Image (cartoon, rainbow, N blue to C red; front, side, top):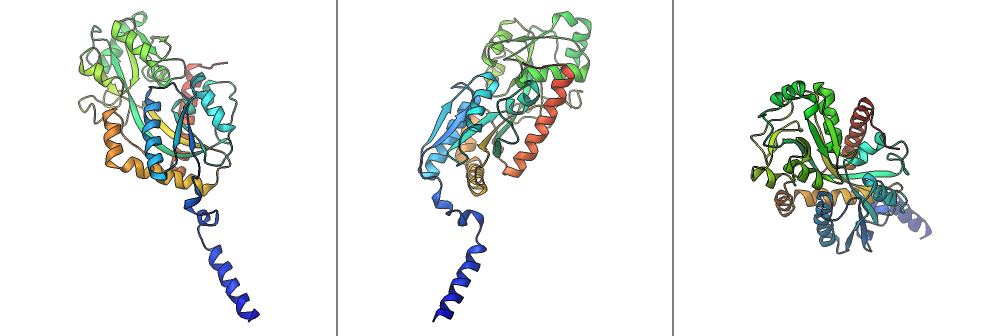
Length: 327
């Protein structure tokens, strides 16, 4: 009898050892068992906040646990990121962050966290290009004509952006580097005021995200010259890419992604990622994203790590070449 029991126990141990890590950690049903905090490092009402609420609502429905969106804007997203970096790695505090997470690494002399050591990338949520837009009064109809005008009248061109380090700011600097032209950057307190200034004619051009600009373009208050993605946007199929417009080596992505604090068990990271991928593939989510002018773009954790490393390197080159840095 003892021999049979030992054999049975040995079989159980062997069988258990072959189970996936997530099953050994308590199984898929053990997470989540309480509400999840989704930190948004931007103000309410913006693009990242909108996507956070769509994802949060879908996760709440899928897991029958409330996902609480917590807006902690300020300091180019650093305040919200630091909160998550200091949170326990248990899957109950997550960060949904925009592109500034990657550009801040080079832009700021010192960050209160290490972007590699203190975070685990979970999944991308979206990737959208910027659009190069100009005021209708500017006598140009293409990027080529804009460059020619800048070379004739370098003192007359100002580009707006919502704060140093934003993709609008860095896109302008990258445009100067790739074309060799000169123009002056004008900083505003957010993209909203910058776009308003452009519409009012205070500045002549701007690189801006797609969602908030579509209604203004349709109203004829601004003119789109190019998109900063490798392929044309389905929302602006008649607008060429920067490469098609004659500017090579110019690709800027406004991305949004979800991250977890370091120490979060891999099986939890994988479960969150798989659920986000499932949510973003659903027709309901695609329709909601489309309403806001956004295309879902998910990834596995490994894919997000590779993408994030490329983004950090890309913006490091731009920041150094432009001589930009915030103390």
